[in-house]
Image (cartoon, rainbow, N blue to C red; front, side):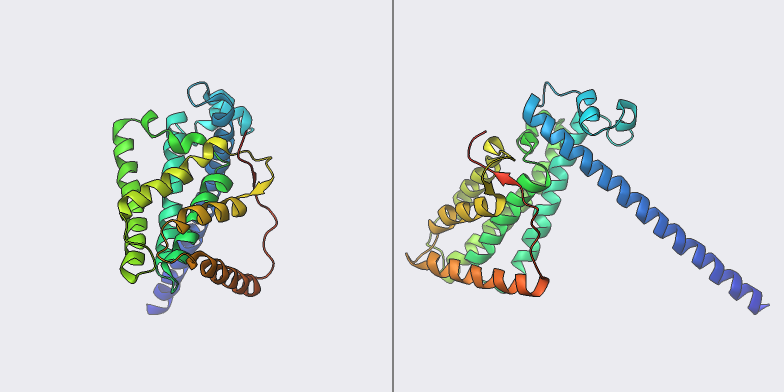
Length: 253
């Protein structure tokens, strides 16, 4: 009979829907716990160095038993891979979002610099693990290098678009992007969570030095800063008050 069959079908759909929601919550909690462990590991890597940090050290910093830690990561190389893979995913997503915006190339590059530093300094506690690619097995290294090259190519294309529009001077985009990324990535070496500057202030300083050298017109950066302040004011008024939780940084440990 169609009545009982229809009721049974609806019941099964409801069961599957609730199961998907439960699975989603479980996966969300699992990912959140992995990120907590990553932050704890990042601090240990900074203090002890990667080679001298053991899983017991990380477990203690994350308030876990060593046995429980292995439910989330098979070893510290697995944590290192997750650190870099997760960071690259966030950076690529931020870059893709920025490239779709209707803004000047300089404003877009400014936003990429800010999101890059936010990922390095705020979200993973300034971990030097971002620089430890050679500590990984070759297969994982190759996977990350492919992602890194995609990210680098995206920024290079953004700079090239600025050159074509006349906003940036005619220089080598590949050389420029490597100089930019090298400067940004090295920030984890001198990062100090107790320093006097926020990551946003650090990003502003980096943007000033790195973007100014690309601009075709000497007064371009003043217009860039004015445009950037206008955009930030609009975002603030539309989203409400800004979060007051920001990492503090300085130029020396």
